[in-house]
Image 1 (cartoon, rainbow, N blue to C red):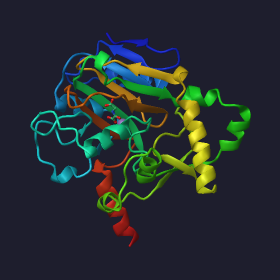
Image 2: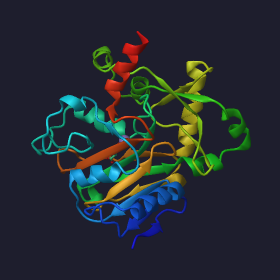
Image 3: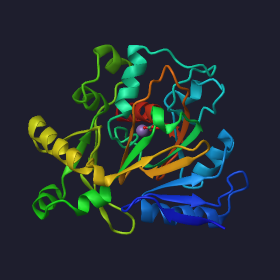
Length: 303
Ligand code: OGA
Ligand code: MN
């Protein structure tokens, strides 16, 4: 029996009674879809599963978005279809604190929607806590409900942003957040900006204000004015009343909707505590591809 219990006054629920080690059933799929539509984020509490079981579960809801460089990734301790969000090297040892590692960690501490900077139609992420430090030392994950935040906007702001288009730019977002961005980094991973509506609508018709760390401006406004507007919206949506804080239990699979929720990592002394977090990210539709490869093919067809 699958049971669903709300965890925060506005959103997020806990799903119990799902057995992800068994062949998934239509009941499981529809219960999770319904819970996600209602709560925007869910934790499936059910104990440790394998990468293959994680991937099989994710594929019930859409095609995987594969990590950059997927086709040339070696099959190591983690399935290459998953993104790694922890602090271990491929042999499973804690990575040293280098400026580059710290830079990546700091980026995830700003609220964001995964992959909003790439041209694939993102749907959900599913992050699995394989090894989690005790919450007291850090490593919780925060979520905000962009639907509730939209509802509370003054009517004047709703009228102003209705129909506006947000600009999502990975490198500019990092620069605005005060993180190091060099010409070499950009040249190694060119990521032209993409557009999303500033107001998105859920399948059941709720509206959400779609900003986050990668959203740097608004089409038709000057850089300065657009940046000021999205920062003002960012400050609104990240107020504590819209935040759910997830304290990890090992084995948890936390699912969030990247279209209507943002998330952020919290600090951890990453050279002291092991954290092994693996993420499947799915798109609404399309083939299973890495966004990098997708971009490359788009450029080829355009040329
Ligand atoms: C992610 C992410 C936050 C965390 O996996 O996309 O942002 O707490 N993770 O690990
Ligand atoms: Mn993320």
